[in-house]
Length: 85
Image (cartoon, rainbow, N blue to C red):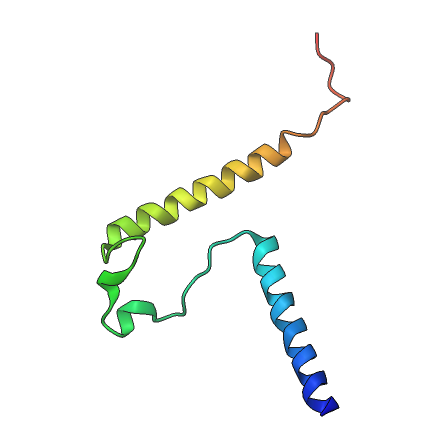
């Protein structure tokens, strides 16, 4: 019985670790390489509705948001070596 409890605890720790990793990375979940297109359900995509152009627009929007966040994080520093006249 202790083996089952130990196995369950380990499994819960693994799932918790994976969930925390997904939360900390703050990235949307991505599908596998084939996704809906491989099984003929591309039109059921909630984001693009099967339109490749819309998917590209969404990816570009996400890239711009990531760049803006990266730029904002560098703006938090103050360069005290530069003189301001």
